[in-house]
Image 1 (cartoon, helix red, strand yellow):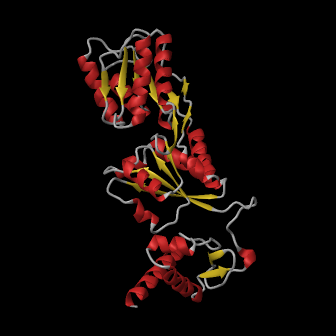
Image 2: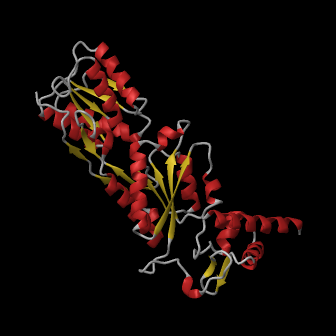
Length: 368
């Protein structure tokens, strides 16, 4: 009996805290009794006791045929006050947006591509009666810790998220999409990085460049590896290889681009005529290194970046860069997830959806 009292009190306290913190909004349906029981590991009798306590405190209201909904503070909710659907009678959804996290937390969250995708995905969700909740996950954290405190209808995982989190979501049957990366077992939406790298190689070749240096990002990232492969394969088809080999390969930072370019200038007999950096921040670091070495961009050396980021557009000179079409990536991820909501069998066919990139010419490339 004491254990039962503890369990329903714990359930009551947890839901009450979420209501007070705004995790559950007025008019929102709570998870079903079965879902609450599964989440907290208790039987339905315990769930019903906790819900009755919440009802007695006028925090929730039970509606026949609907379930239990959150009430405005200090009042009950009428049938006509339910705020769980939009004008199309679609249910309000809650989607988790999980970003990979490591020891350099601030650096990862501030990565321009991540913040842009978060913003764009949130905009797409808001237009589709879907609430997006952001969090960061590292290798040590457990997805279940988040699922125990918040009910997600679906999850969008971003980039190099730990495989254990993806696998756990699949085990639990939670509709999930991997954005800006791909794995064979999960619905994936990504840019065609191999084509992006190939576009750069074709472009620089057509501009008359033959001594083309490659500056890699972090090769742990599949995006980086694919950009390298697309670039080097296209050069090889034209009888060329990367000038001096591949530089970098451990980081995407300005500092890495700067240091690796300085190292290359010290090792190469003559400077390259062009450089392809697998990320814009690398390209900007390289730009600084070239300028310090007395080389003018693009008169002495041309630079092409990747991502067409805001930093690249405000550089001097403005960087030619590959645009990955982030709005299309975000829109596709949300629409794929909504498609799984409407037809759960789609999750059994984990497609890889690739968005084509576009090379955007600015001022950092000169024909030879």
